[in-house]
Length: 351
Image (tube, rainbow, N blue to C red):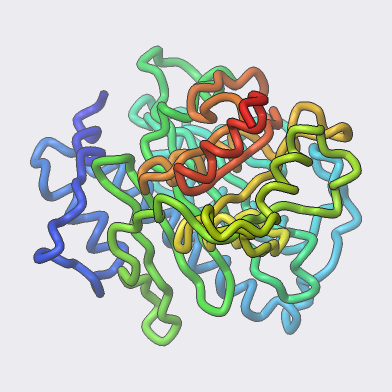
């Protein structure tokens, strides 16, 4: 680790030491100031992500007026139609992360290959991101978001390669997401010791303020989130779990309510705050899963585990998976520990 790595030891403050109301920048700087040996590169990188979130927010808020709604006519590496806002968000993140040369390279869901931002040997970090999750919801004014994760390069020197990104999610230094909804909220974690914290954007002063301190997911929830339009393609195990969670049984507090937005950031955010389970399982159409390991599954798995939750493919821990490709897809199940455990029991055939 570099001298900057101690910043990852940030610990959640005791209840009597609440920092609610401080800005995101202050929160990040306080983390650095607690460790005199820290160089500031990691904290500067996080601040650049915060800046990108502000810039993207301004674009999202006036998208209809600025003629940046709709498709570009292009198709990305995932085979999906590229929205104009996808392109804008991607370019904004690249520009922000490249400004201070702390980020050596990025990998984006919108780009087939990695993009090198700095050849400076002091650039020790790489960033993965989905610049604008929920693209299909943009034109109908439903919540969308940005997802990101930060990794430290191996101390091997030389030019960044794709191999620098193909590391298990448990090696993430930080992860977070930005939700563009009724308000803009940035949620970030530097791991279990650092906890999970949410910052709400106040456009009148142009700052993110700490509004959700030490987020902890409930042990069990009352809602489930899954695309039931895929029922015909589900495996028998998923169908049995889905039938079980909708059965009426007062002793086990069923049925659960169904909540599904169709934007991962929105569905996962609700699940994080309220508890329950989000599931996008493998099915007959996508036997390897649908969501991207590097850009979606790993960052959210990192956040949920730091908040006391669980993240699984239904059969194994997400953060233990060693990526084999930049755009690898996996099944994803996130939520309260009890609810994810039950899902896994159905997948194993124990129920």
